[in-house]
Length: 522
Image (cartoon, rainbow, N blue to C red; front, side):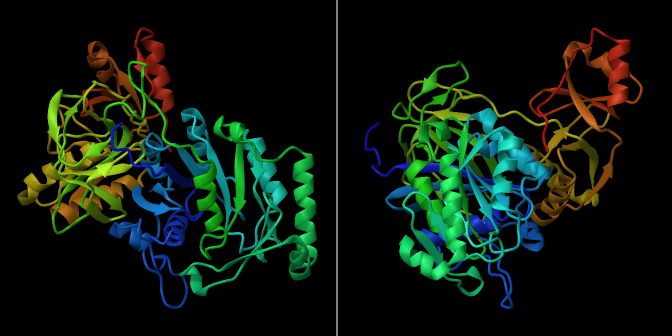
């Protein structure tokens, strides 16, 4: 690779169950890296600003993340590519796409709630993808569970051995700081107003810590000794191999422990490495340029109404203006407009390196899962679509806005906001929207109205599951009572069933049918 940027990269996703504090932590990490002067999440009498990574109107109104957002900033002479993800299970497909584009994950667990259903599912996805996971026990400033109980739950439910690198000094809700198990020091925190600015951190030796924190410090020291006696110390090879998860205790809202999270990411999180191609070969980071698209997003800039394709650089050096090849079509693709992203804010990027996330503007030819490359051809595996469980027909409320409605539906389909299913019987006037979760329908309706001025009527359908069907068996399946066959944009035929009992009955009546299951979402 020529002209390589000497600064190492760390590319990771922040994932968790809803309301565990993902977007707040994202903001706090950027704040501590001096990428922000004041955190966007300001809680208290002064009101609450939307976090920089939550830019959609629905996100600001509800205080939840419903789409992934990429942030890039520098810390300790490293370039950090952080991708915040939706926590709500209705948007798990977006989270899954992000996990194809990162090298590790930072998992947040609510100290009071422990492991929740979405947390468990995300841990399993990380395991399937071989992503090392750092765990942060968040909200330690509030009443919560016993720390040993939380560790036991992680090991029992997930099978990862927790190896705490810090230990809380004081019980949940009475948080003075942490014992840093690597050097034995007390890291003492001082609160700031609403957590809007960096919390002052004081490193205190063990002798003085005993004077300051008294019995709380002694309990933390005893816990440290117990953990070491039990073999719960960090081992880098075990972490990278997906056998252990380093654990930190923090409060993202108050900016407690955030510095240590950044330091840990720089110290132990894996750097970009070779990417496996669809044919089983590997594309080394110093090979010719290559990247793959993991997200397409429109509507971020209402003034320009442009479309942004998020691409993870896998190998080589990206230079703005270079002409690359679109693997799916074999056609050249010009990259005149390329940007680095910071939530909704963007600046032109001249060069990018493996691990970086770039935004390609008005890349109408690019779809989620596409590969672009220079030099030696390569194609990375496509990103699977989840099996939808909720279905609704969409029709334009004002027939005078038909063209805008059709353009909006096509755009949202290409972005993967929902899967759009069609058939000759239904026509283009009333496509079927297929979603992992019902909140996706709300996003579709809101964006069609806001971005295309095309309000829609949505009518829920009585289907609960979908199966992939072979083209030569589509007519037979579609003739079954209560079953409908529709086509996805990529040509895949999906048979929709009202429930699992009807599916079993059709399979029993026609044992030669091949009905393939899609990856489960949610």
